[in-house]
Length: 337
Ligand code: PEP
Ligand code: MN
Image (cartoon, rainbow, N blue to C red; front, side, top):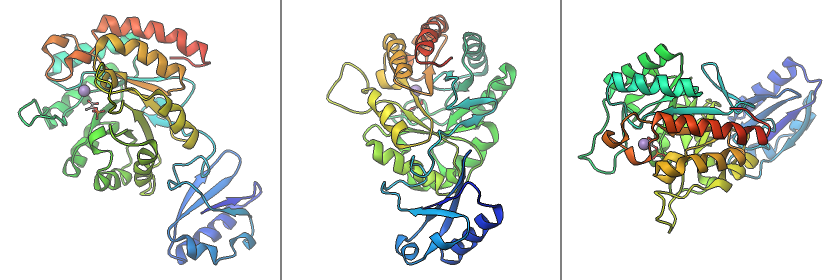
């Protein structure tokens, strides 16, 4: 249920309704729009139906949100959300570019990559320290040591940093060293992890599960928002289909669908979607043309020696060339990069 206030509603009137909702055992979530305030009342809808909330001073209307996701929906908040990661505003006219290696391997390599991507126009540095690997025998990441390198390289280059959190037990250490927390595709429906990052003050990047529908993806985002963290960026990273020419299938239409249904910013990861470095640039172009608010790109100075995802990692020079091509596409859709 959402309670829409009149433009003229006062703070006192809004507080009055908030207190009433709490008394009814509901959780009021406030969305302060440019034009008006909306409260999303989370909990038993039946309790609300029995309440004549329309008669409260300042209230314009009370509506049920038809979608199963509530706070994430455009019905709850019409204007696009802009998520700040350091000085970077994801969801603004400027397209955010997150770039870096799949895994943090050592400091020198990371710093080299950070310098190269920054110079080419990236604005957030990525790097995994806790890696979700298919094989238990594959490189699992450097853990806290890697996070220290990431924070240091980010500071050195003036780039905020993002890294994946796989386990609730690591939330403190990941929060300490990062500016944004990534929830990977394999954990998109790890509901306890989602609830935990919902309590975090850090912005969250929520990747789409490789076998999840857009609706399930948005329901997962709802877990985070309903615990109070509204700074969520959705990331389309390809889904499983019968096609085996690429690692996954980039679901370009999902970007438009998610943006239509939700106010949250949506970015795309053509590196994991394609699994092949030669396909990253054309798919990144398609994502920008299709309305993506940002990109996540894997870059490595020696892809052939990378400890994970070398086949899909761009050399710095290729990354630079890709950025050049993206500038033209961004301009064509009224954005910049
Ligand atoms: C990653 O970003 O390195 C990663 C493992 O991504 P995904 O969760 O999309 O597979
Ligand atoms: Mn990777």
